[in-house]
Image: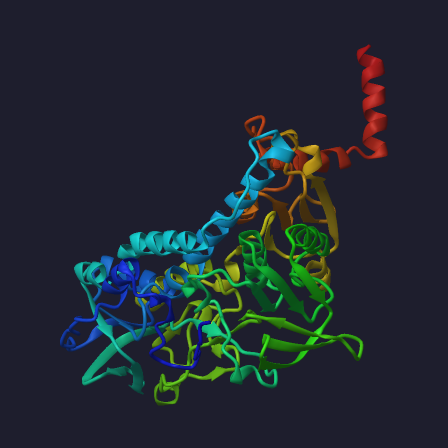
Length: 513
């Protein structure tokens, strides 16, 4: 069982076990023999944090010719490379392949499959692929780009200066990109038991016999489905009455059914009252409507949200204000110190790698070139990588209505898409919200096997100001699941055939007869 001290400034949990793959990862993103350079007299940009937002800021600024310093206290690459996107998708792809092999016989008259897989090999594959990818985020690569890379703790000591060890980095502009970490809920006894988070679950080498998960958001759902498919007995506890409470209720229902079909035991609308160690592993006392039984597990994953990494940064010395949700920024990502910006999870409610990337590009323009780019102009999609996947972009119908917009909703179920039927992947839908009286797209939800790959079509249309009717004018290859966009465009156009227009057509064809 892995113990995690989330508040430790030197926590390098992803480096367990220290096999050849993790040694290679370490050599790239936190070399043990790394020597920090002497500080330049003054930097155009000092970047604190080596996750996506920090790396994009540093590489972009250096590529433009700026003098840049990058400071990271743990692992370059941040959550995405080490404990987020990369390792999780390695696990999910393996779990999906296991499940598809089991279902091949019943669904497609394929060969029968029996026996157990090798979870240890799955995890080794993940570590190998993560190490393969890590060179892109390596300290040496950024040094070669012309960035002064400092490994250590950064602390503001003035409005224009940061200290790292014995070095003082003076800057014209700085960006705080320190990201976030898993948050622990205030459950009595939780701090006295070893529990997993997204930072430590990828260090497992043996499959948990019984895995308890607190939290029914994206991480909880993804890991619950994956470990159930690997063979764990999984119990997921969520205080809401449904999974993925921020998503469309119909999307949540489909994911709930999928998880139950995969053997996940869902406990919805419950509150975990306490956690303690026992002879039978970790025991959770669960309550619903005033009562409920205890549940036991061998490993416990806590997946209930995140908190910003702002401790120890010396923000007060720099005149940077912060709150419970992180560093306070304006629409141009500028902090209360006009010379300091912030980007990524430490300053955004959209905590996604692609958001951090987009915000870093805004910082480069606004900090170095007096740009006026706004984060409110960004159109940000996101995806939960369950089977099927759930992707969303823009407003929900409820959010649009709350903003005073009259909304019209169009939905195409994947049962109406030929390729989805041929693939045996009909659980899902495309739902798009438009401003009533026009085809202006306000947002949409896509539930499909490859929703994450397809949601970009809707994002692009919104970014370019293309209306829903434009999909009907676009030729999509047949048969593909992407044809669902053409179908929803046709659905919108059919709705434009009002009784008055139909009367005109009737008259026209009588004349044309």
